Image (tube, rainbow, N blue to C red; front, side, top):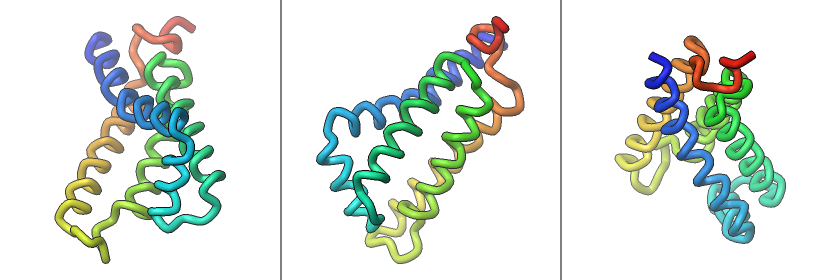
Length: 127
């Protein structure tokens, strides 16, 4: 079971770590993305996104305060789904719906980690 929980943590965190580092290393594009989504204060929202994605991603990957990191990324994913990816009024509603459903699956993975914890192959498991 612990090996499977480690695999879940690696796979769940990979998406957020990749996205967070991508935004960190291309700050201008991160802000353009926020503007493209119609959100105000692009520098603030880009920075907040980077902090959440990297902080939550590392938390889940390392199994350090896993439940808190999972809750943070779950809330972030839910907010992103509702504010940015929801299909109502989207130019391509089928693609937006698919993305929204994928985000629901990601949220389900975080619920799993919140219920089970990270397993023993984690920094939390060593305390």
